[in-house]
Amino acid sequence: PDPTAPFVIEADSLTLNGAIQGAGTLTLKPVTDSHDIHLGSGPVAGALNLTAADLAKLSSFDALQLVSVAGDIGMQAGEALTLNNGSIEIRSGGDISLGSLNHASGSFDQVILQSVNGRIVDANGSGALDIRATEIVMRGLGVAEGQSGAVLAVDADRIVIDVPGGIVFQDVAADGSVRFMVMKDGVLHTQLVNHGTAVRQSGVVDATGDDFIDLVNTSAALFQPASNAVFAAQVSSPNTLGALMSKASYSMSAANSDVSVRLGEPDLHAAEYGIDLSGKKFLSSMTFSSGQNSSEDVGYEYWVESLNL
Image (cartoon, rainbow, N blue to C red):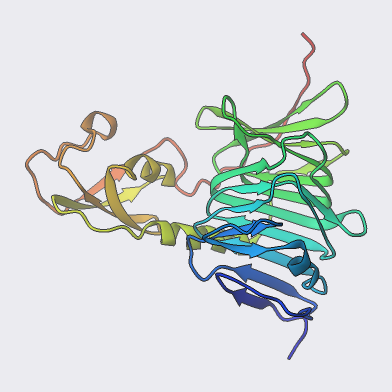
């Protein structure tokens, strides 16, 4: 077999009795979509648990990819992990919580952090440096203003913040550190704090991550049907679905944004969505709008803001 070919291990639990040899990308993914991935000591129920010793047995691969479709990926608080892989990709449908993630020689080539429906935060909250890398790509939201949670501290030469529909900007502190922030749907999120001199980039080529978003959306759309009313809707933004989630069940085709929504009650906040289904059972076609581009591919340039008041 080709040692550079991608290698995938799907397991809800894993025991490694020796090193796994390879030279390409190794992907670790729970079989059960809802299972988390836990890194470090102290095994967690309902998670694929990977200790420092386990990760050391995977060091021959150029890239290590950790994937949880509908769960969280997190490190044991207060611990540090040292890896030999050149690149790390952590992709989660839920939250990502990382502490001190170190490279054996000092710096990763690239780190991709992708959270589709959760947050990307610092597990330790100490303010100490969490990740050093030539490039860090952050696809997902950090800590929202007013929320609890600590922001990742990094040292990178290049930083990409990819949040569809969000406006990314920077704040330069007096100590020279740069805080990367995103304004999305009227909420300010602090993404990370960079302690290096980074060249910022406003785009990312990450086909694996694009496919992962489709996979997460498809998994999230599997709900039990309701009984009262059924309609097919063309939705302009996945954010509209988030508002409907607690009131309806639906299925979604991520490829074309077609959504089949099954309402649990005829009156689905008509004032919010302009829909009046009182006493009706029908199949029809409607359009929702959340005020965002349908594909959310609108690009925004960064700007630097530094204020002394």
